[in-house]
Amino acid sequence: MAGDVASRQESVEGGDGAFGSVLRRHRLRANLTHEVLATRSGLSVDTISMLERGVHLTPRRSTLVALAEGLRLRPEARDAFFAAAERPGRARPGLVPAPPSCPRAIAEDRREAHAALAAGLPRAAAAMALRAIEGVCAERKVAAGASLADRIAELGRAQAFHPALIEWARQIRLDPVTAQEASAVTAFLDELLRSTYEVPERLGRLMAGATP
Image 1: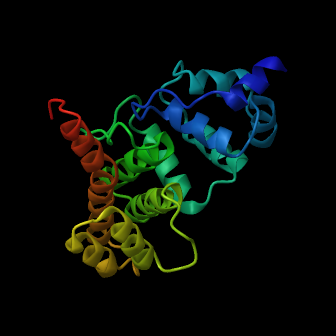
Image 2 (image 1 turned 90 degrees about the horizontal axis):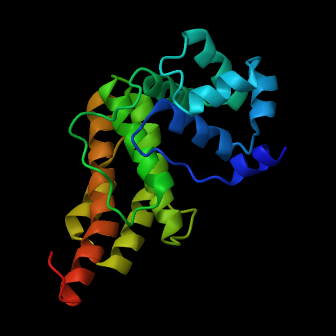
């Protein structure tokens, strides 16, 4: 029982995009212990634990389906979940890490968006990118309720974004979701993270007399 409580409180480590990290993050977000997820999915506690620790790197399709059912994943999240299992221990080749000050959950959503895009899953990529963008707005205390473009504009006014970034947000169209639109919203996310976290951090170091 103590181990279950600890697993609820553990930080999501392994930011390398490994499937085990993705599984653990979904389980913790759902506030599930290993035992509860095992009951929901019909899998053993040991199987789930070994998947999270990377002992089993290539889960069977039937195992993935059972886990997705147990986690109650929505279709877009399910696609990204399956895509993560197809690339154990690796992120998309050449993917630049998120800025160090970017919250881990947002960085993980970004990584999953890129992974889904690379796997040819535009709906999953767009869903994960939008979740990361919403995460940025929430983390920066931008009021909910307005359109995403308006929230980006409010965030931009607070942080002095380049006007082109705000205009870009207004041009995002995801109905229907095509590979091109999914790629565009993922690229927008990358630039949003750079403008929100990387640029202020770098300017702070310059102001403090540090090396850029």
